[in-house]
Amino acid sequence: MAMQRPPSMLQEGGPHLHFDKYQSRPELAFRVTADDLLAIGVRNALAGVQVALGARIWSLDGEFIDISEVITPPADRALRYTFKPMHDGYLVAAALESTGATFPVRGQTYVTLQLIRPPTFAFRMNRWLCADYLSGSTSTGWPWGRTVGSTEGQGALYSILATNPAAGVEWSQIVPPGARWRIRGIRATLVTSAVVANRQPSIVIDDGVNTLMQIESPNPEAAGGAVVYNFIPDIPYLPLLASQQPVFLPPDLQLEPGWHIKSSTGSLDAADQWSNIRLTIEEWLED
Amino acid sequence: MAAVITPDRLRSIVYGPLPGPAAPPPMYRMRFAQRDIQPPAAFRVTPDDSLVLGVRNALAGVNLACQARLWTDEGDIVFPEVRGSPTSDRVLHFTAVQLHYGYLVSAAMWATGGTLPRRGQTYATMQVVRPPLAAFNWNLMMAAGYITGSKVLAWPYGEQEDSIKGPGMLYSIFGTTPAVTTDWTQVVPTGAVWRVRGIRANLTTSAVAGNRQVLFWFDDGATTFFHCHAQNTQGPGTSITYHGVPAIPYTAVINITQPVFLPPEVLLFEGWRFGVVTVGIQAGDQWGQPHFLIEEELND
Image 1 (cartoon, each protein chain N blue to C red):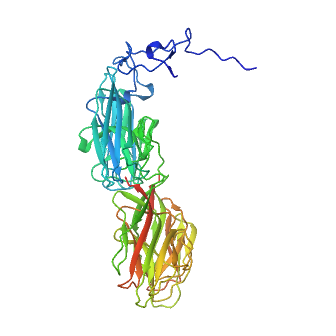
Image 2: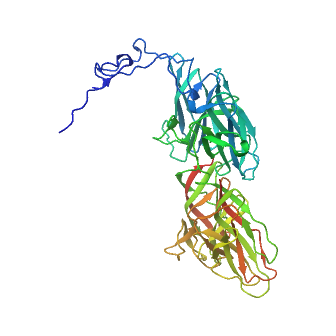
Image 3: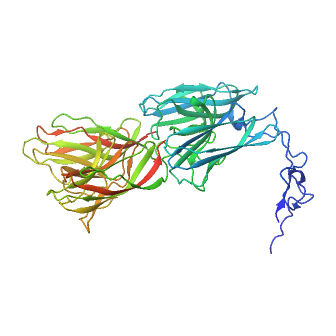
């Protein structure tokens, strides 16, 4: 037999909660004054992104003071701070979200939120709030936001068309400042001239100066050829098939800012031409 | 229709539209107590307590600052602060800041100045302890994690992060060029864990007859774990660059480049080693300066 539900706690005559409206005690750590600043740190890689701040202070008189700001960060991946002054009261919430028509994906816009004291050029950080990437539907904030490192988890995927070099010149792609790249694949075409010689394409990783790694194609390319090289993580060495040449890449090849990934072709002729250089990249902001 | 409960009418349920925001009922506004406040007892501290900062650092020139907020019994906020430049030897060093009578309400440690670390370079912990500092009595663990350009170590709302969970810092590192007819060895430095992501080294053989067989080896400082050998031998009077690459298939020498398979995840602790052994090495054989692609985390 079903048990009878107890009467609602909110019915007349039941036990009641009563709030003391004059002696509330919020969490002391988030008592702020006009000397405090909310510092918003942003690293961004996507042009057109807008970051919106919304914060709420509960004044000592019991009023809510809403604070808002919209930041349009440059897409240069550099760390910049924006400061918003606080008022006398308790900070009860603060959040950052992307707004406008251009939404980032994870790996493109990394933000931090903290309470600081001046001077702003070398501020004294004293209350940490959160750090995370923004995306179209995920924001970050305090309370209940996360502190996540910028190189953790999934990065942003990019399909990058590198610049075609001049004839007889190798192609090269540099990792931009403030980025960490995982190379997920490269496809490039080498058309060779009629000058007789076997060309030996390879991929080279350097740290900006010194070669760290060089991986050769298993087969050379003869004169008058047009071969598409597919550099693929973990692929076994295979023969040329329908003008497609698979070439091995390490499964988790990560590069720091300023490092290069580039071609190096043995016996490259002055009229040989690299073209259609397409890189699939996973990128994090290197903080 | 939604049920609406207003603060002044908790004893009844009101059905109807929401009250307009411009007309709060009387006595709606709250005011905060400013006297006789009782902070959380767990964070009561005295001069017997110290805020202890532990740092392992691998980057020269890093400057760290730590500041706490302490609410004194008189109601003032004071800011115990310490600044310093940790050594880049990856060794764990502690710094202690004596506290006062009051309530600790927040603390943070961050990188300052022109040299900012990246993840994997500066690992820090923050805790409240009691003396003796030589073997302190730990009683409040507050935060642990890597400090970077914009990410700080903080309490509350910071994190407790292990030093080894990835990703680490990527380094392009040169080994030492060995003497002629000598193989090279690289030791993982104290306080580090390395993931070997690539090895590159050139061997130029003398005219002395004989085939040389190259093997990369990994050990714990004494006992070898495994060898990774080149598929092909190298004859006299030649120069071949060996590339140890994770997961690369065994293949022939191509254009004086010899790929050598490495396991996809070679993790080495401090004091562990890797190197090369050249079976059949002959007088006059010379290894060039080896070059490594390393991912490093601090071994805490």
